[in-house]
Length: 127
Image (cartoon, rainbow, N blue to C red; front, side, top):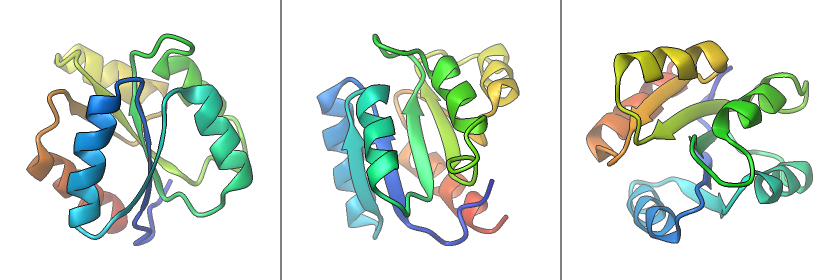
């Protein structure tokens, strides 16, 4: 999966505070950010909108866990090209490995370190 210098981000998180904070920072850094409060909304968005380069995916959401969402994303030929960054409060190396094994392109723990996130986004763009 490649970002290919695509600065369009879909932020999927059930916490509006996280969406607000990350959106503001990423927009200030030149990214276009859309958001979804859950996976149903995210899939509706992805079905209607083309051009998302990366999904920042909260792994712990009430309607559909991130692992289930990753499975759907990587098994859908029209969505597989979108890079997925797993975002979770579970910050152990085992959690990172679990996210990566489930199909995430990258992993970032909460609270999100903006410098680390920007580095991950830059690395995805250079792949």
